[in-house]
Image (tube, rainbow, N blue to C red; front, side, top):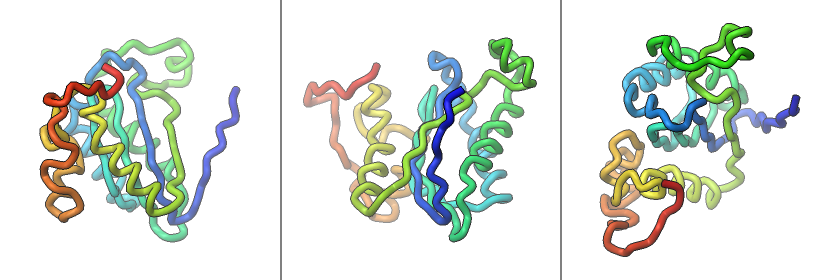
Length: 177
């Protein structure tokens, strides 16, 4: 088994990507209120700051800052993923290895984590989070994707409401579809 190296930095800031086990499903957006409840419950028990987040049908991206002296993002993800899974009907396909361990088949076991290095890295990852629905062809304008912290950032004055423009008019291809 691969030994994953996580960079546990107390009070650190991190970018994460979390995927569904079956990437063709849209469980995250279909059940976004269940997901929000899982985040709220975990945050209530183990505080952290969500600097940015976007929920897409089959994956999510987020940037978190942990409290000073706390580096346990792994426990928070375990709680979020398990709380979300418990909120869904048991009708997913489950592999033998997951079944043997009593696991659900909702999320991929692993997730991508990147430690934010500085303010430039932070800004780039916040932008990446917010542009992602456009990149995946889900909307033409960032502001048209509801499950995103972009709207909060506009309210805070961090972005103009028309940030990144209207991608339908310029003919550019923004990646995976």
